[in-house]
Amino acid sequence: MPAQLLDGKTLSNKIREDLRLRVEALRSRSCVPRIEAIVAAQDPASLAYVRMKRSWAEKAGIESGSFEVNDSTHQDAVLEHVWRLNQDAAVSGVLIQHPLPSHIDEEACLEALDPSKDVDGITPTSLGRLTSGLPGFRCATPMGIMMLLDHYGIECQGKNAVVIGRSVILGKPAALMLLEKNATVTIAHSKTAELPALVKTADIVVAAVGRAEMVKGSWLKPGAVVIDAGYNKVEGRDKDVGDCEFESCAQVASWITPVPGGVGPMTVASLLENTVRAAEVGLQGA
Ligand code: NAP
Image 1 (tube, rainbow, N blue to C red):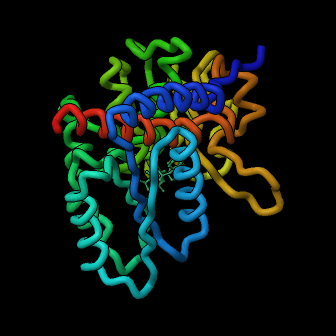
Image 2 (image 1 turned 30 degrees about the horizontal axis):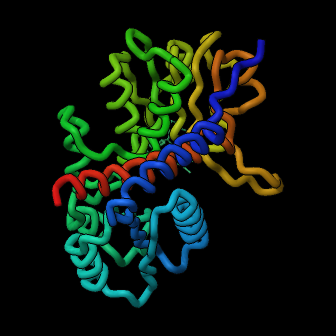
């Protein structure tokens, strides 16, 4: 029987509606949540992602702004902007959209960001707090994945999970969050031997690779849950595709995320959830 869909689009719409109500409550207390993005001016994909995130934010009643970094923007100017945002009480959260232009030290910008405004959950402090099991903002894409699993009642405890990819923003934090839910986790990467055989052992597969349709249905254990975080452009195809070959995987899996409409919208929902929470925490602390 074909897999059931883990529908991130529908769930994210519901989350956005819930957030809109929380934003209304904040606004009634004169607190307007605001997210500020820092983005490469000459990167059309980054600009499109930020435009989409800002449009979603505004539909939930969250204000937004952005600072575009171009090839002549000095590193100090970006750092000064981060420090200004840290100090600005009207700013709830800051999104540093990867990648910034190559002459900018992105790590230094992340280190400079106040962790209480790190709504994308990717500063070393936020990632360290996740590793230590301490409260803090969780990284948006894996947080969205966990919200999706939770919403569909997919139990992680005692399951074998294989995460393919070890990036700091996706693979590693996804593995830590699955571990936090008592899954037994293996992280695979480009040097992993016998990847199809390893994937065959997994009850839950998270593909976070960036290689179009790499994971085939024949790699999967029957009934596996497949989370496809990949988002790849393929020449000659009008639709972006994931890291899993949807048609063959859906024949073997029990649950699968579509691309688009799975992990992508859940990433934005997580970012906005963190932004609203930052505003709520700020109001309590005021
Ligand atoms: P990344 O930083 O390029 O990391 C890719 C990871 O995949 C690396 O750890 C790499 O291993 C591993 N890898 C590459 N080739 C492999 C192979 N043949 N077998 C096994 N592992 C392999 O990418 P990322 O930023 O994590 O993004 C991964 C994908 O998710 C991309 O398609 C991206 O567009 C998508 N993404 C989606 C969202 C969303 O909101 N939906 C958000 C972020 C990213 P090494 O470490 O050994 O190089």
